[in-house]
Image (tube, rainbow, N blue to C red):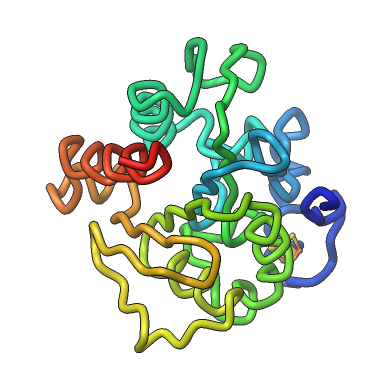
Length: 213
Ligand code: SF4
C-alpha cells in the first residue's frame, strides 16, 4: 500500500487558511506556518485524528500536537499505553517515537480561532481519507472531538446518524473500529469536560482492543 497522500507546503485549496498562513509567515518567519504533516509510522494500527493545528503548537513546531497543552496530555497518554517511546519535550527533535500509532489532523492548516469552516474540512478530507486508508486491517481510529469524528465518518462513507459521536463511543466502520474522545484541548480540560482519567480510559480501551483483549 502506498503511503498516505500529503498536501504540498503551499496547498492552495482553502483561501481563508492560505491568507492566515501567509500572514503568520510574515509575522513569524521561523515558524512552520504550513500544512502540518502527520507523525508516526506510515502503516499504523492506530490513527489518531485531531481537529487542526494549534497556532502556537503544531503550526509553530511543524509536528502535530507539539508545543501546546493538547500535546502534553496526548503524548503523555500515548507513552503510558505503549503507543510511544522516549520523551515528549514539546519540540519535533525531542526523539519521541510513536509505536504503531500515527497522529494527524482533520484539517492540516491552522484556522483562525481554531475553527475551520465546513468547506475547509471538506477540502482537507481527501488527505484524512488517505491516512485512514493506510491503517492496517483490524486497526483503530481515535477521533478527538465531534468535528474530527464527523470527518472520519464522511471519509469512510458512514452515515453520521449510524455512528453518533460520544466520548467513549465505539463504532465498527468496515475493516476498522472508530473510538471517540472529547478533544484534549486546554479548554476542555480546564472546564472539566475532559479529565485525564476520561482520556486515559479511551486509550486503555484502544490498547486492549488492539491487543485482542
Ligand atoms: S486545510 Fe488542507 S486542503 Fe485546506 S489549504 Fe490546508 S492542506 Fe490544503
